[in-house]
Length: 597
Image (cartoon, rainbow, N blue to C red; front, side, top):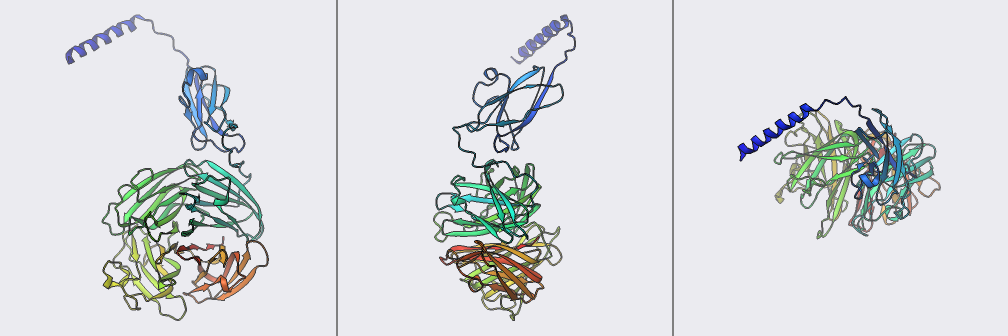
């Protein structure tokens, strides 16, 4: 059969060649090269429409089924199409079901030169309203802030919500533009304006109260300020039983470090939420390196549109959502790289169904390393029997042997220093657990210690410094209690002035002590400005270099109020705010103070 098939095929080719040879060669034809491109946008808001269908030629000929034979727009609403030997004019039809009306445009096709056809689409009267995504504010903002993870009733009525607070850190009023983008496709959900935010004052948004946001949803948010610099903190709550906070980013980075990411580690897991701060799409790579080197090093990627956020869930083996191949019960240090600047928030949870005391804590990704990082607060078996584990990541190109030095919160106590038991490989991390001898966690309960000694951190509250001892490091602090968890990143860049957007004095059951760690300052002045207006309170506190001081709002300012606070010291300091609710449980969180621009 094979020989017969070949023979027949050759015979057919021979006949075809004879036929072609008998036909005179045609004159060279000049084909019309058609090319068209443009953007599809919302006719009212002017925003790009993603995945709009663009098709060419009469509808009854080209399009036989809904949204078939289309060229689809990308995340910027852009499309392009080229052809040869087409007509001199061609109808272009645009549609995005079901929200937008069909629109047809006749355009002239020029040879070799693309015709630009921009198509603003009108909303279908029967479609959901656009949610207030009016046109962006004209002009160049003074500053833009990026909030990678904002939610409204995510998971149900008692699910996650994220109130956020924006503080004007300038000397005159400013106007804010706040835009919410869908996690799914980066499209605008709503855009709002907040006019005339006075200097030093704060604006608060509670997504659960926003009727223009859909329920059970997750957003990335940008805040653009026109007039002055701003800072923002995001409080993440799950009903009334879990809470933590992270800081909005004013700038992104092409490399971001996460010292401590876990997969099914004593019930904990750490999803990383990554926001693209660039103006074009980017591919983000996340390299997971196990602490002990026993698990394979894995790299995962995400394609992220401008302004959009995506996440990597270590517990999931879905390649679109998770991190297949990571090993249960392991701790990883992660290095995230991107051609565009990104911002990252790390949420660490132990709140699966059936967990008796659900907790979670948050920390910002770290974009800047330093030879020394400063931690304004650490604790061992104090303040509600909490314990601080500290994870130090090596950011140098070669191995380092980092160390931690602890100073008691009240001055006069002796400092204690502990060094990693072995050199830490580049990109990897060392975890210090103060409950155990030399900070080495183990299941052997005989290694627990409580009395200060050369190999044991004594019980109490501390400030600390992390030293790279030859290279740059980053440090993440996890403050864990019997029914609570909170986290923050140690500061690589102490400063003389800080802004604290959200400080509460017996407000809604919350109080928020401030911890100032002196690097070289002997005093600091705090200015407390009430959210609702009124007289500001000024307070000066004495500082001791190397020591942290706790400032309690309940004994500093009038009670029952919410404050924006600015801090000015006569030398460098580090600052954090601890947020605690009288109801107890996991209503506990920490955010880092914002060094003034």
